Image 1 (cartoon, rainbow, N blue to C red):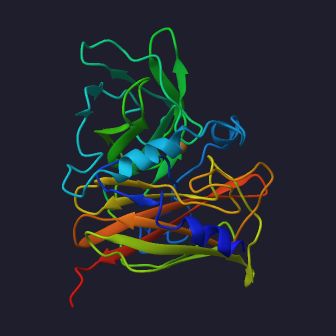
Image 2: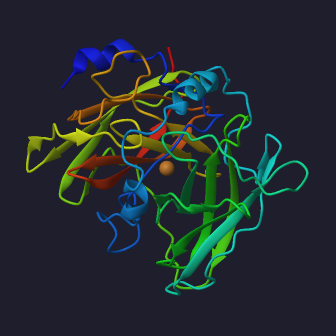
Length: 322
Ligand SMILES: [Cu+2]
């Protein structure tokens, strides 16, 4: 389990200020999601996209993670605006109707309105695209392709259901701080809103996933995700995007975006990415810093045997009373 290694790091680079986005995520419909989705990943993972970059990418996120930790919870939460840090997410083009195959595309504009064509990789990718319906269902975390001539990001896209979706772009333009920009995209088609209920366990693709710990507003909340299969601990978690798992937290109500990058083990230095070929599990630890009491939708990505799975949890953050 490499517990010692993880514990050593814990709390150092892991504290994520809500105000900032760190990286990536994954998902599943919360329990109590739309009928027929209770367990299934409502979300798809574009494996060919996710896997194409391999595991030995950059670790630019390490330094950015540390930088982010300096932010305070008083900052405006990430992911609630289409412009921040001098950059703007231009209108998103996507199929208008559920079930219609097409392309999702967009550009990032700098302060002069010029499309951005140079990015600093974070968590091995130049841009992380997170899409979730406003009720928290249908989460996807994928990596579109950049046309470096035009600055247009695109990815094949089909909406599985109607509704309003939040499209988050998590990136750092070259030489700039990471930002998370978001827009709403409305999709015609049947829409049965899910009502996420608190859930600390879920089942996805034959794996059982649980999350332990309490979210406490205004402080680092220690959380541990545990993965098992057929009642046995899974100890073969593989590095994915530079860690043994990725977690995104969204605040119910405004979908403010918190990206938490769990640390795996063994590692040489705090914040160090796992070595190629390393495995870990069944526990993945991280810390999240949520700004307010309320309900949070958590989407956890993990990789086993080359396949990425996503587990969703719903936790309530309650103000500490002493
Ligand atoms: Cu990503």
